[in-house]
Structure formats: structure tokens, C-alpha cells
Length: 243
Image (cartoon, rainbow, N blue to C red; front, side, top):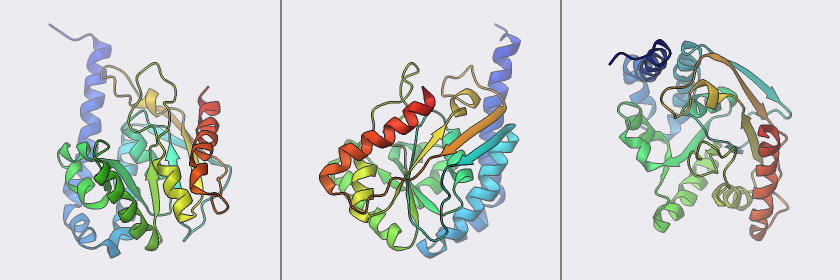
């Protein structure tokens, strides 16, 4: 059975995406391997991931970023970056948005993605959300990375919400961590990633890809039991933009 022309276009668009994800990794794999041997070289790995890998994918997919900042990230400052999660493109757009090196906290299942998963395992903080010991270990690893001057990025919905949900409920982890380490929380809204490259197979396409970095939430004066209040305040900022 022949695919309709529109569906064929979506299939080719997805194939092209995975080619763009894999090709820079293959080309620069010796350099990428060298920059992942030690945590001390992570800033160099981040530069490569941001400027070569993410840009190749974003512009190769004909997605044209429009990033606005209510408040600028300061060089050398650590942050907790949080955003809505609707697309694999979120990873690349987060790299595009922040010049400050950061480490993703993400689910361990992504290590199974060919090529990408190999480096994902080496440079990200992996979490098994069904394992309490794994969740506890995340805090220790995050502390180590923050002590190195890096930021942390978490998608606080804990996964990709169902199609009809604009913004799922947020988990506590990012906000508990931000308060514990006295780092500002940076809410980020991805408006168009779901339209550009959603998880639904026969959908998506090129176009403008808008991002907004909102004013930061300070945590210096907050106590651990205020994490829920902080969580909802941050969620409401993003939900208002998407509503």
C-alpha cells in the first residue's frame, strides 16, 4: 500500500532527523570521546554538543530559533534549568538556549537509543524514577557537578505528557535540589517544539521555533518545605505562556 504524499513527507522528515542526530557524532566521535574521558573536560564537550551537534540538527531540520530572555544567564553562575517537555527537539533547543554549560538529568531508558545513547550515558545524570536509591544518587551527582561550576537541567514533568495535556504536573526533584543548593530556578517555555517534531509519527515540519527564558526564581531564602510552593509558581509561569 502506497503512503499518501503528506505521510511520506513526515517519514522522510523523521529519517532525516535521525541522520542529523547520528552524523555529527560519527564525524566528531574521536573528539567527543576525548572530551568525555574526564569530567574536567565536560565544558569542551558541551561546546561541541551545543555548537556543532545541536546547531546541525536544528538548522538541518529547517527549524529557526527565536529565543527571548526576560533575564540573562550570567557566565560562571550555576542554575536549575526547567522547561516543558514535548519533543526530542527539546534537548537540542535547550543546548541552543544556554551558553552556560549544564548537565541533563534524564531517564535511563534513553541510553538504548543507538549512537546517541552511548554519549548520553557518559555525560548525563541518569535516574530510574522507580528506584528510590537511584533518585537519591542523583542528588549526590548533581552536587558534584554544581561544585564544578556547572548548571543542571531537568524536565520536571518527568516524561512527555499525553497529547491532550498542555503541561503535566511537575515533580519535586528539580525544586528540592535548587533549594538545597541555593541556585536560581530558570523557567523556560518551548512554544513550538511539539509542532516542529512531536512524538506522534505522522506529524511535524519545519518552521520558527520560539523559546522564552523567564525571570529567575531565587531560592536563597527558601526552606526545603517550600519546594511545593516554588514548584507551582514555576509551573504557572510556563502554563500561562502555553495557555
